[in-house]
Length: 226
Image (cartoon, rainbow, N blue to C red; front, top):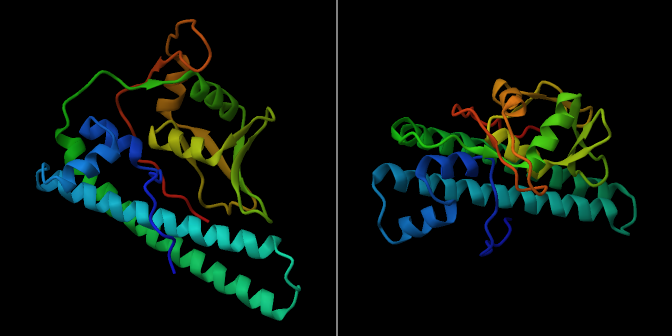
């Protein structure tokens, strides 16, 4: 069973790369596809991304079901254990499908990135710079055993949301060591682009608005592993 599609956009790890390559937002990309305004390559990307969004929603749906079972007032018996195990299996299947859809979307994106006109280097917001500074001191992605929520804990006691981590990964600023399980903690480190972003000159302005120049090379974000 899958969750019903909503009008609200579900973010994916590739949104930033897609928007950089096509020059506009992913929702506008889908509108152009529905209106028949895209060439073959961009239409294929829009369809692949739409499948990826649906797969991300399935993952979220099964995660919510699992959290509700774990936090419910149901009797703790074999029947509950069986329901939890079924939901875990469904979540694992949904995550595998999501990873496959993300790979397919990345493949569809590559030819568009290859011919995309060079633009001014992207910029990094102050809040992302703060996150990079914290990650530079040592950081790990953890999954909460009860709620299954993902978050990055840093050595300087700063917590970074999973959504922001995905954003930084999509920009090619950080990378995770997925050889470690998230329950034990996946080390998160800066990439060369991330280190360059920290050393780039920045102006002084209100928090959350100051951008830092990002090197033009953007690496592929890794797919989440559980």
